[in-house]
Length: 121
Image (cartoon, one colour):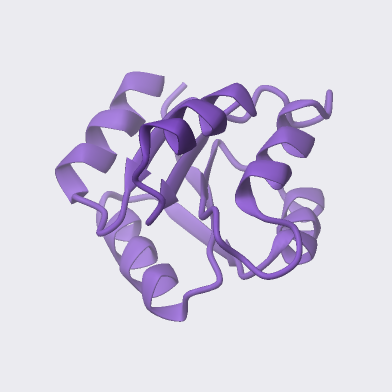
């Protein structure tokens, strides 16, 4: 199933604009959320085909949010790719343990992101 609808969760407006622009140019519909609470509202409104998740956010961080989403039977099938400035191998391993299907460090390389998305199809 090709990925059409993407939810981008990031507390940085700059990052949201960059990723939204990048994905829309690829023909995807993008919705955004700036924190965990907003992310859950977006999920309830419309189930995405993919979630791009920042890690460092106020309140619930991306690792915690990824764990909650991937353990929820309603959303367990939605792949999550972490897009974060946390570039340590331990962070990548921890993110994957929480249920993420991919891990990209910022600044996001458009070709790398596209390759991760293509790998999910």
